[in-house]
Length: 513
Image (cartoon, rainbow, N blue to C red; front, side, top):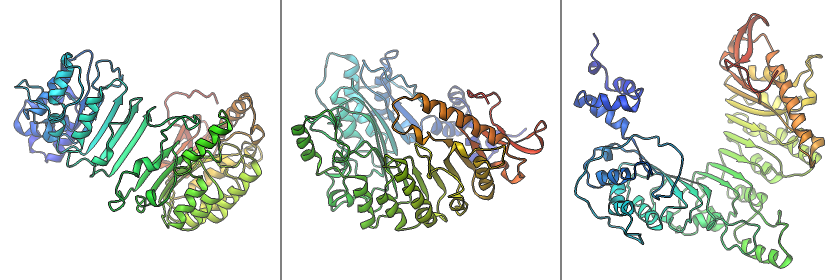
């Protein structure tokens, strides 16, 4: 009989990692050797959260960490902070294991703030919160949920404590409507990646309200950082922000490799309609130093010779295409729409992209996503077939097609042509085929024509995928995704010999074919 402990440690770790938490706790009791393996798995992620059902739990957890009476602090690599208010109802289930809880003498926190001293839960939090977080010296990643009900003192304590963690490199902040005045990100000098998501009314006011004094700007993010100590940001995701690339912001973007830019706020091009002339002048004066157009952003990157490897944006313009045509080596590209409001201008951009831009990056692209809102030259067709064929290193491809080019009866089907190209791309593993709205519906006020058009187009796409074949055995590893379902290569006696694209699901999808 094979002895579990005679196996290599990495094999034992893989075996125990498949066990549920309750069974891992049982395995810990077998011997010290197994305990050392399972203990690391159980306590690699720690969640601190107040529970109305177990109000004493958070205090016991913090006390155990603060008093150094639990070994969890040696194994924790990620920390999730989900709220400390007795009125918080975050709803999400904790994904970590409960840490060991031992009772001991209380220790006082080094950080204090305004506090309702008569609340027992708050007393326990105040006594141990700072020292508990500081004890997790090996934590590398923190996910912090800021609830609108969290006391201000707790946020101050957490911020100060995170600044003391020597190994912290990744910070994710979810704003749940809480004020952001306690966030002193400049204290976190070792961060390599930060993600901020959610809603914060005091920090990110509606751009359309002229009496607002706070705007979400890139200058807010970098303005307090000394220019002689640039952050060397490599990945940046911005949605509905004011962005201006100048001497203040560009200093931190010299090493930028990935940029996701959606709904860039520029009141000069998209002025709010609900303000008078005086309010508009005030708004323009207040945003001029922090906002710029998409064209200004791409021109600044090109002039500063910041060549990105990954780009995702909804602001497709000539400036973007000129930037992309100025270098080669792009690896991932996502284009979701163009900045024009008529079909002819959009087609001009599309033809320029497939003729002058895509060939520059054909050898380096591994992921390409081109999904316009309306049908036109951005969609896959005979006019750009060669451009896609040259992208021999593509691993994932997502494109839209024109519904009027689906014609199985005459064997001139654009979906079949696209599937043939997928067969010829040696590295392609995932192809997504979608539909776009009809150009005739551009500017329409009713959504019914759009719904009907897209439903019909999606149905035709699925029928074309299932009738394409028989397939070459080399495509067996490819996955084809349509709006209706996902398809893989399978044998189908009813269709004939060989392989055909059939649904990867055991049951049908929501869309009747």
